[in-house]
Length: 114
Length: 114
Image 1: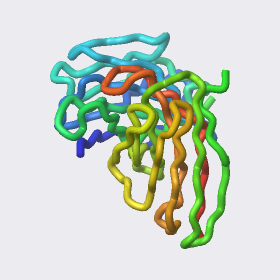
Image 2: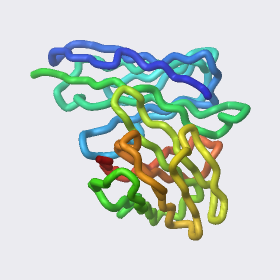
Image 3: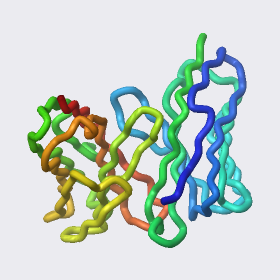
Image 4: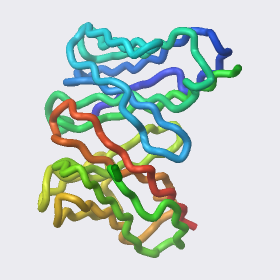
């Protein structure tokens, strides 16, 4: 079973601050997806990164896939209260019994205070 | 657009009871899956299906059964409920598996086992 370690588990910051969430593994993934989840709802896809070293930007959110495709990060610039939620990373297995299956990190609960 | 519909939204069971969680999607997706979400553990794959008539086990399959008689429906059965199965259950679908296609999640079923 592949493991994806996500940190930090909790993040409480003031509006306007920057933050980074990390996902790390010893396993190689075909791709890495980032989801955001609101209370009472299912996760919703934010972005998929596929190529090692790839960087994708979504407004104030920057996603990076590690060169070796074992890790990823999400950086939010000038966080806003509307960014509050649960952020989940998920890696698509590249081989063996994990091939084609998504492994989720534990999640980061982000709270942005006005 | 309905997307992925899960019923019921909430359920309380007694230990030993059985029940079926329903999941239906209207996007003609071939790949469907069931996850459970527990605090601090992200989402863990229970069972998945790559098409009608084909199912396989995920990371935590014990105590659960699935079937896929149609493309649209993918019910999850709890055979004899145990308190350890108290969780939030999410059904997801995607256009393909072993691919970078996004997972579309339902809003979850919150299940408590007394």
